[in-house]
Amino acid sequence: MKRYGCVVTLGVILAGSAHALTAVRPIDGYVCMRLKWTGTEAETWDESKLPAIYGAPSSSAQKVGTIGARAIVASPLHVENGFAEVLRLDGKKGWIKVDLLLPYPKSADPSKTCVPSYMSDGGIGFGTVKN
Image (tube, rainbow, N blue to C red; front, side):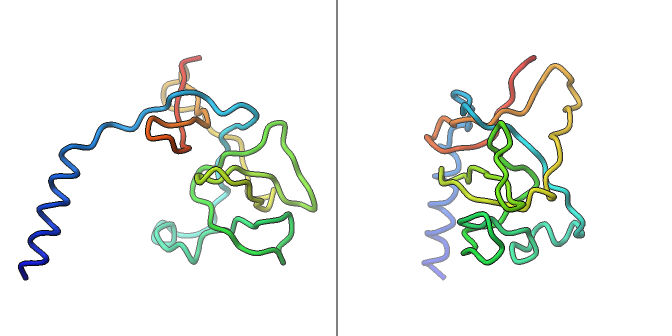
């Protein structure tokens, strides 16, 4: 029980000192796209139900991850064997079935656009820019 209390305390301390993650600069050669999702809302939380990201443009290639609601897709669109090149959040390239991709919708604020970005923590993510 004491161990659990220490973990909770440490988590609260770390969460309290966290800084907001912000987009630093766009990633050239990529655009935001969204996933054509046919599953249930509950399935979006089950990684085993999400579409695979492959290490090569083939469904027989090694699965290297899964894709969520948004994707960072090479632009212009790079398609091989029915698979589109994507950039994973770890910075490595992957491939997803091209028929799973849809244009990214305009936000509620039409003056903003989704932009694949390098983030303030050094990672890769999704930022927005004013049009």
